[in-house]
View (tube, rainbow, N blue to C red):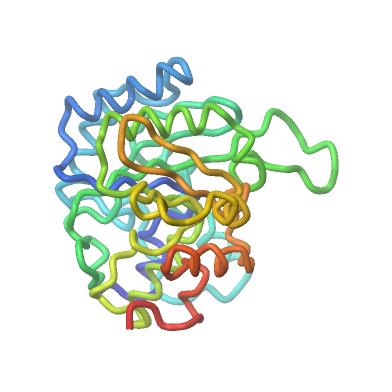
Amino acid sequence: MASDLRLRQDLHIAPALFFTLRQEIDRERFYAIVDTLERHAGPSQGASREGHWAALKERIAGHSPWSSLVPAAEKVPETLEERNAWARGLQVPSRMLKERPYTSYVIDEIQYVVDVFNPQNELGLGYVGAGNPVLALLLGEVTLGPPQRAFQPLPVRDRLVEIASFYRILEDLMALLSPQKVCGGAYLLRVMLAYHSGEISPLTSPWDLLWTLTSVRQSEVAAIPKDELRAAFSKIVEIPATSMTLLQVVPGFDSVMSREYTRAARLLKRTAVTEVGGGPRAGR
């Protein structure tokens, strides 16, 4: 198992969508994914799709963890200089695009980057399905200029629920990939560190928790009154091409904990991502 320090560096530190797949991504499917993004956002930025696919094949094989590109710190950073150096090495979309020959697509101030999560269980974590194929779609914030006031609402963090193109892209990718489950948010680090510490049972899948955005089978919510669902979730999106409904707890992919998660989780009889990493033990 990786050290806590190594785990923090090898994890994506960015809001993201996670699609659990029935089979590994191949070249044809990858090209279909970027075709979908290009259809909505226009031509890519960065490397070519061929270069991106070549790098992604290495990722899928488990041969290219982040620490192979940005060496992990050997000790917890203590000084301001060490903390700044640590922050510059974290795996966020802007840094990824410098270190990997990946493409990206931008629409409505959101930057989309296609990657995979934990291929071949490179993180060494013990949870059911840790080696299964998971597509990760990372979401970067791209603002149009300097902030006009002290607090600038960001597209992913604060107002994602208002951005129609995000849900169109998500719906098209779900129709294309037929995933087993879809979830998204900014709580990946919290959840994975809970597995690392043993707080979450390895018999619990991280994708069975209630994330900020979570797919459910329509049969799971059929018996719940519509007014209760509308009261518990900021957005409800039915995906016609699948038997899934997307439920979004709060308007953006913010990592700030709120009581809305607990109420929504109880309605679905799940554990929320905000309840792990220092909260009640999940799956015990």
